[in-house]
Amino acid sequence: MNVLILSDFSAVAINATHYAMDLLQKEEVHFTLLNIYVSEPGATEEAITEKRNATKAILEERVQKLSARFKGRLHRVSGCYFEGKLVNAARDFVQKNEVDLIVMGAVSKRFHHKTILGDHTFEIISKIKCNILAVPEDSSFTGLKRMLMPVDFSASFGNRNLQFLNFGKFFHKTRLSVREIMNTPDREDEKRLKQELFKDLNHIRADFATLDESAVYDQKTWTDIQNKFDLIVILGKNIKICERLLHNRHGLYTSAPNRLPILVLHD
Image 1 (tube, rainbow, N blue to C red):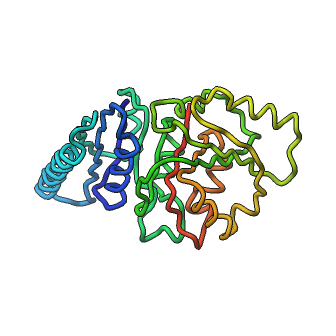
Image 2 (image 1 turned 180 degrees about the horizontal axis):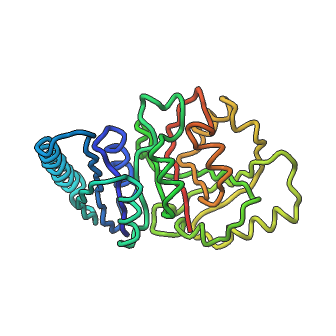
């Protein structure tokens, strides 16, 4: 399994790295830490060279620390240094390598009262078609038992989107609660059709219900969700869900900070 970790060496990025390695502790994984350096406008060549060398040194130090911290697992860690824009660097790496998952921080504690995802994270989710795990700064891995998947079934998607949930052992024996966000009651024949999309999931029990859209923005609902679940799963093709729940400008603003990692699944 190949996992790309986007890291700027911040606390939220380091925490996301540790969470991913703990989640995948029983898997054979090659982790690549990708750090992007963007020079400041007007910086001298001497200053750029000094900053570049310092960044590369920090990256190598992080790789060595992670290799030592998780020694004994089937994990291999390497670093990748890139100069340019974040999205371009991540997309280029994904296209040239068989990446199964991108990992990055969701939002730092400084902003988690205002939004679920930061600008860079939402941009990566929107523009790169690869499975992405976004982890808040104060989220720690304590096991994975219950996952919540908010769904807008007006989008067109098949069970291919869900195949990552069959990958490896880390989703085994988990429960997936599929909640359709809607304004009107569901019809039984439509419900059966939707359940067909999830029938090929292995080792995962799925249950289905509806959730009124207005409730999603309710503080009590959001607090209950965080008490009951360990992970939020979203299908990348559910653009409406991503926009309404995740976008930091147009989506959910909440007084209850999110501590749950968010997994976005793409084709």
